Length: 136
Image (cartoon, rainbow, N blue to C red; front, side):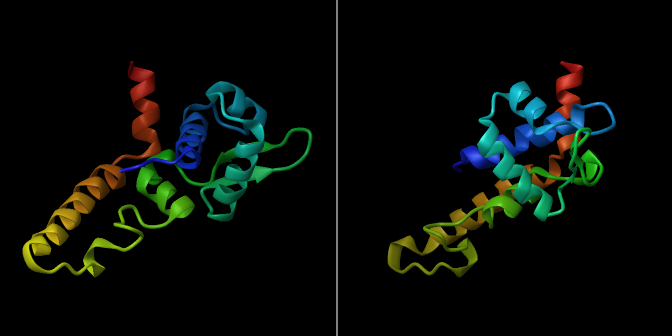
């Protein structure tokens, strides 16, 4: 599985929001805390806001916060909102693949891989990741 910079930055910013005290956190604070390029982060935060994963408030006292509790937002949900399906083969979902001859069983390998990846990503929430930081 390949994780893009966009997904990595989005998850880092969202986990930072999950670990932050109640209230708003500015994009600048997020960018600084996670060493994310500010312009790229603004674009990502805009997409996350449109997806309903973060809420924002403009103005001098503005900033961002999670739109729902961190325990209700999975890593899989963030990935899907930013990039679509979790696991594809050449851009095709594994259940839509067709192989012939000796390679017929390869479809089952891709299906099992998708199941395993989904299991980890859907069961892991922002709260889980932020909580691991607190207990470390």
